[in-house]
Image 1 (cartoon, rainbow, N blue to C red):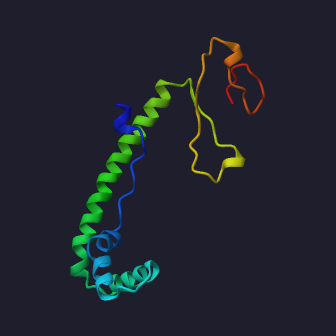
Image 2 (image 1 turned 60 degrees about the vertical axis):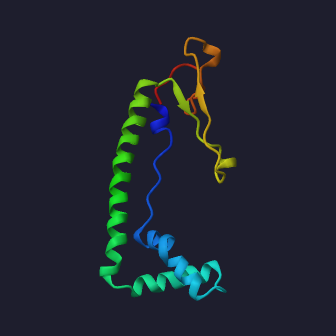
Image 3 (image 1 turned 180 degrees about the vertical axis):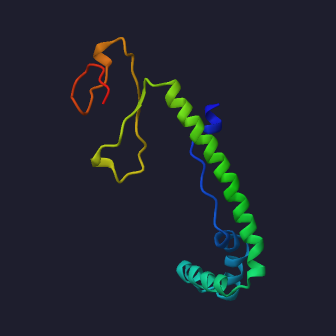
Length: 134
């Protein structure tokens, strides 16, 4: 069950990005092989804005379908995470220290035995090892 809901679902690509990845970038590179990555992106934006709405509809429908699937997966993921925290209140996710706030490091997950006072976490509000409700 954890493998199904372990990582948060990724947001789907926009209609523009779907178009760029499938045909836009390829066509721009064929016409302008000397363009940099930035120039390709700028040209793609110009082409997308100039494109008629009836040509965009294929990509917009695909993007809206992907967004609907994403929202469904996200709803299930949120429900799973909420159930997990209700079922396992002894699991504590430590926040990142301010020293590492700009890294991609994930918070450490601490599991402790509440019967052993030496392993009880310290409350950041009252600095007590006793079980507090802050």
